[in-house]
Image (cartoon, rainbow, N blue to C red; front, side, top):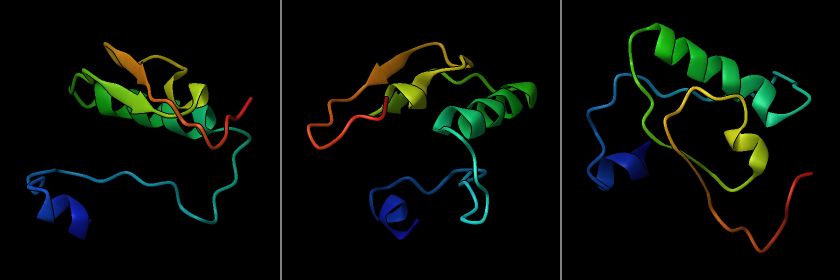
Length: 75
């Protein structure tokens, strides 16, 4: 979060991170319900950015951008 603050992103209301002890089958299994909770709280997610297709599945965003990752791809 230090890097976010140094880049000028310092007015967030929450930072949502998966606990290390939580084990899920895929990123989507964790991320989709988190995005749903954000929208259920009255927010609109206008952009979801990830480097894996599983980062973007499940909806709850108006637009998705898949970034290239030349190092690996999770099937």
